[in-house]
Image 1: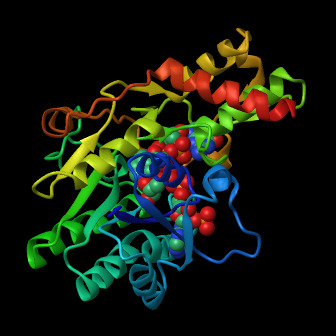
Image 2: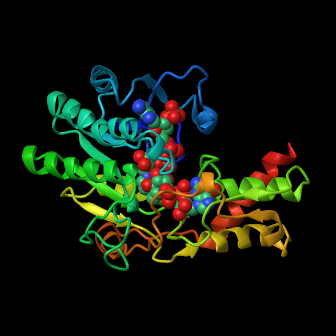
Image 3: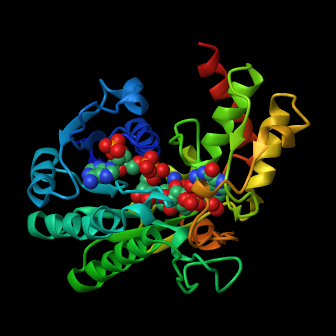
Length: 322
Ligand code: NDP
Ligand code: GDR
């Protein structure tokens, strides 16, 4: 019989890539969606007839249990979160409710209904924050620098704790930044590629950004969802860093994005250090060591940094031409 998987955060960036991947493996895919006044189904429009949507919210314990009863999953991927770091200073309590306690609610629902369900938690390189070691690996000490990062540390450790307390198959993937044409418009990569496409087409004159110096280890979301699945196919549950092992500054991302559309004098279009895009505490330098994932899962990234930037710019150019 086909396996079932329940994905929270199906309408975000990673949810649709994971759903497509699981469908290609023959899974029956269920996605949890919360009620919004205007539904946000843009990222799942191509797979809407292949998946089943269930109504629920990480804030509502009963709705999580209902979703599990209805989907009868062998695997649950908890991708839902308030995931925008900048917003976590404006809404720190709500971020904690979604991104931290939401994980416990889901783990409790699994514990009460069927402890054999395998669980994937979307942990983050933001947990390393002000880094204490370079490159960062599974054993690197956490030093989060935002309410979001703090909430993710909670989500990470409650996953480890349920694994150790109840012998649940609960894994935590510590994923470094990963992007795609489906990335939300407020994250810096998509903000840049969207603006570059519009500037190229004469629809926009300036791009306002915050700090251009932070460095991130940027990969492609489509590559990273495979690692999530691989973690749940192992004999033993464990935690894995997923990263490319290469990092680049925001400025380098801007430069390559403009070069993709043939603009070399990119500085004239950029206004940097704009206060509303600066953060009370910054994460300056992230670079991951994914050698454990390579050794145990056999996972390696397939898309280069330049290919990623070009993919995103070209997608935004197509969208903006329409
Ligand atoms: P997105 O922000 O694109 O997607 C978040 C999803 O969570 C959306 O589908 C959103 O639904 C849903 N959601 C938010 N709040 C709730 C709630 N209360 N109840 C139910 N659903 C909710 O994130 P990504 O796809 O980029 O990331 C997936 C996960 O991985 C997140 O947990 C993120 O923190 C984590 N992560 C991401 C990384 C990255 O670089 N992308 C790196 C490391 C970790 P709606 O459409 O209704 O808003
Ligand atoms: P990040 O992603 O905080 O790493 O979290 P984001 O794209 O928001 O920022 C990356 C870096 O760019 C700098 N920056 C700006 N960022 C935004 N959004 N807008 C700007 O105008 C801007 N200017 C400069 C930021 O200061 C930062 O240093 C992402 C999210 O997906 C998290 O959910 C995930 O856990 C981590 O990646 C890993």
